[in-house]
Structures are given as structure tokens and as C-alpha cells.
Length: 209
Image (cartoon, rainbow, N blue to C red; front, side, top):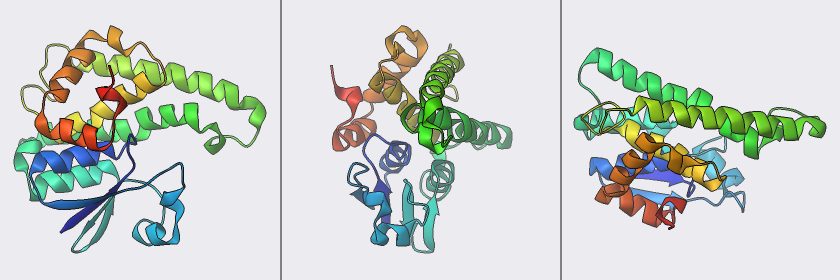
């Protein structure tokens, strides 16, 4: 049995959606960041980095959304990743960008202490992070122009990952509703039964009026 460790509303929502969409049987355990449950000795045995997501499989633990989502598609749901090698590479490249650029820009807003030890620069880091994250959302909006899903006509694990950032933008009060392509796509995402189940389980801000 697969077991996913996640935190509601965190980037782990991407892997949560991927698993739910795959149809694979899995167990899950929510961790509370507010209670620092990701830092408990028990969880650090699962993922010594103290981060989510973590997917426990028979062979051990897989961490990082990009790796988990590729694993899920490869083993359980090939239709959730492109079969063409170039298209698959583009999917991986997009998820890598989510991981190494979009996510860190958001982290600058909420956790500036990860990037500087001088509290005097925290407000500047937050402001720059907010500006960069907003630019990332606009770029995603542009990537969705003329498309049904992130990669084109076919839904993929990349879509669940992209939904995370729309929710984060809404959480911090960015004018995400002005992003017409991204918002229309978000509505299509929320109409998917598997996505809705995950968002209800995580009590997502995306379900709020």
C-alpha cells in the first residue's frame, strides 16, 4: 500500500491530486505545519529533510513532487504523462520550474528567514518575492492560452502541480481572478471529481466563495 504524507494547502497537494487521479489505492496522513509535525522524530524517519510530500512505497520513500508525480504516472497511470519523449521532457521541465523557481519565490514571502539572517531585509525579500511570484502566475496564465490543460488537450500530473500556485496566489490576495486563462483552467480543474475530493479533504481555499 502506498502512503502519502502531505500538509493541507502545501505543495504536496500536487502529489495528492496525482495519486487521486491515478486511481491507485493509497493511504494518507496529514501533517500540521502549525504544530511542526513535519519535524517530529517519527516523520524525520520518513523524510529526514522534514518536508512534504513524501510517498512511501515498497522499496522505500520517494520525495519531491516532480519525482513522485513521474513515479505515479509511470507505474500506475501512464495516461497522466506524455508518451512522446520530447513532450515528456517538456512536462518534467515545467515541473522543475515549478519546484526551483515558482515555489521559492512564494517562500520568500512567508519565510524570508530562510534566505537571510538580517531581519532588516525581510520586508524587502517579501516584496520582491511577491512581485516575482505574481510574475510567475502571469507566465502560467500565458502558457495556458489556447489550451485546455497545461500540456495541451490532455490532462496530466502537471495540472495538479499548477493548481497549487493559483491557490497560493488567492491566499495572499493577488488578483488571480484577472488571469483569464488560469482562472478558466482552475474552474475546469475544480470540476474534476478527483481534484474536488482532494481539495475537500484538504479544506482548500479554492473551494471558498
